[in-house]
Amino acid sequence: MRAVIQRVKRASVTVASEVTGEIESGLLVFLGIHGDDRRKDIAWLAEKIVNLRIFEDEDGKMNNSLIDMGKSLLVVSQFTLYGDCRKGRRPGFSAAAPPDHAQQLYQLFIEAIRQKNIRCASGRFQAHMDVELVNDGPVTLLLDSSKLF
View 1 (cartoon, rainbow, N blue to C red):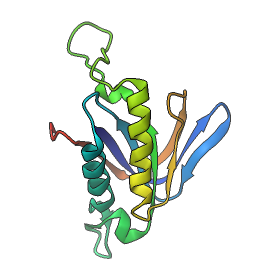
View 2: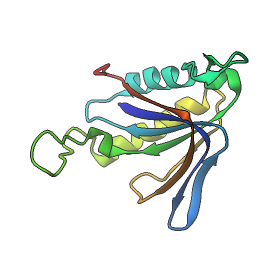
View 3: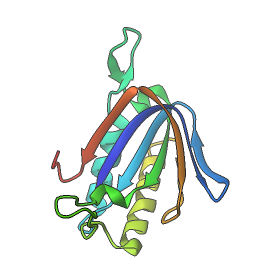
View 4: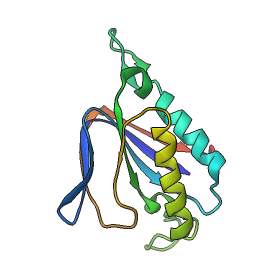
């Protein structure tokens, strides 16, 4: 499971002119699901994200987490995080989970975040989405549950 995490002042996702999710200050997470991902990957990634100390304290140092600050999270499915661009000019997506498996884990990830008492908004799985954000910092981090980076 891979995540691109961006600290944002605000973010929203729109599908066919309908806002499906929006947050004020918090984290925007683009979530990619690998074909081998399981519940253990969800647990690890959810715990890691909500406890990352990437919000500034009173001294301007990144010492506070999403939980510490009581902020929100917006999660957007992003199978292209498993795009393989090493050969040719067109990315290959064979490592990404099949849609049925990916959708199930995507929903379980959202529930895992909500069980930590975090407000979690989302996009719509397999939809063409317009994502708007105001990056705060900018702060952008990459996580991989297989710890490849």
